[in-house]
Image: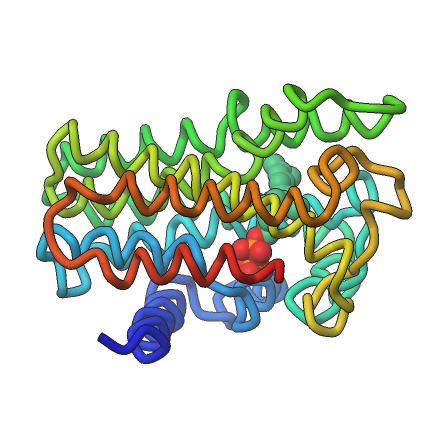
Amino acid sequence: MDFPADLNRLMTRVERGIDLHLPPADTRPARLHTAMRYSLAAGGKRLRPVLTLAAAELFGVTDDAALPAAVAIECLHTYSLIHDDLPCMDNDDLRRGRPTAHRAFDEATALLAGDALLTHAFALLANAYADRPTVAQMLVAEFGDAAGSRRLIGGQMEDLLAEKKADATAEELDFIHLNKTAAMIEAALVAGGLVGGASEAHLSDLRRAGRHLGLAFQIMDDVLDATAESAVLGKTAGKDAKADKTTYVKLHGIENSRRIGRELSTAARDALHSLPGDHQFLEQLMDYLAARGK
Ligand code: GRG
């Protein structure tokens, strides 16, 4: 098994899927569809859709059956990034190595492009899985929960509230990370299982792996924010320290954060043990993500 080649293969499928499953840029109104495609364009790591395709492969899905679900989660993730970058939230200028959507277009267009990606994700699931209504229903419920008020949006709300306090607690920080970051990573893995017809037990293993991986990923993101350059990250670095934000690095220090990230990545690998198929790619992906913060 060749990890870089497999990662490249799955990322290439995701890029093709995005092109295939998004309205063409010249669809009226072209400015909106151009902005949607601009924000989705290459530059993202495609972690979530790659997880969906890789999880589906564990259950023998090697054709494009999981591709609409993979594209849908990337649409949801990208919508959240566009809105997070807006002046009323993080007010950021750089995303995926390019000007953020509201800088490249304008604030109203960025807001609408985010809204349109959010709704497109659910329309895509309903249409692409119309011939498998139970799968369609489970995917819509899974992504709706993950991106909803108790998880992604709830995590973002608590993050904004935490910024207004001098110090957030470790419990509050975990709530934020488990919902703002891990929920979508869990859903990405579970979606692959749903398309592959996974049992309840296997879906719960995927969810557990996603929860550990999501937390590990966010901890490494905090470490990178404190240690890497903006040019390497493709987004503004050092923002957490500048805002005196409570992060894993602030609460535990860089070395302890790296250690906790590695432990969580091992827990994520362990959660895969009883799943069918070849786990090597997912295991190596987990190691690779944990090593990002080194
Ligand atoms: C606005 C509802 C709403 C939510 C915003 C995604 C998000 C929540 C905020 C962005 C800031 C942040 C650090 C979020 C944690 C999740 C995270 C690490 C997002 C970045 O994901 P990557 O690194 O990005 O996978 P790419 O660009 O590679 O897809």
